[in-house]
Image (tube, rainbow, N blue to C red; front, top):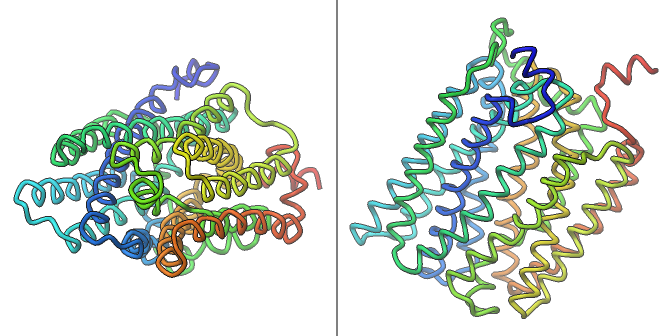
Length: 416
């Protein structure tokens, strides 16, 4: 990275980061539009909240089985190549859905097969991208890069479902076909990234000990352990995304277009947060602010559970996304700053297993509870549970609650 880049105060001056940002937008647009298509078509075919929950479980399986491999691969090989392969797998899933819709043989099993492919792709792409992003900017800009990178995700999560819902109302095939275009664009943008030493040339051999190093690193640092487990349990209980088709069709009566707006609403709030944080990053009382954000997330989830108004539901989801984004930026920054680059692939994979997979398991939990008790009780339990988890974690991990500023492990060791 040039000295000019290193001294620049603008993220847009960091060309590798810009290409990664564009790739993130394109890839996430494709994922979100494809997810909307799968969820609406599945609920049309089966009328089953449990099947909607199974979508989350199917995506979780690859993450659980591949986590150790993912982390080690991300630390040994060119991370750009891994990301491109993952995006190619997502494109294959979009091609399968497009062919099935065109041929008129779309069914539950084909939808689940596409979900599994997406789960495999995301299991590699997300933690590898997380490990790559800090190397694309100078170290002092990492927290701003995290917020900027999150903004790419939120822009796509806003535009993807909204655009997908509108297009779906006219042509479901057009949605999945457009996803292919987005995944192809993402591959091109990643290919354009040029940075020195994307993966360190000298890594330890692939032994069982080195593969498990990510677990040992997180377990030995209470702050990291608290961060990743907090999100695991909060999202596991608080995820309502899987049930949005139920709310859209049976509670709010707004159809696939309304579903698109419901799926976009959290990202609208999140985008407002990350744009603000990219210009005004949180630099003090980090721990208390993280727990406050989690509490607001639980309250917003509870409000959405009880709402029968489309406008109120959108507002609750926007607040939910806003609070979640603050928490995500803080947690991701803590993980990346406290982890050396040689370990980032493995630690990011562990973080993805706990954090990213909690989203998919949360969808399964929501769908299962909804099948037993109904959609509203399922989401309500999640909101109240999120509040309880925040309170419990404040006492289980007092060091996390007391964090004032971002510091690497080496900086804390020097102080002590």
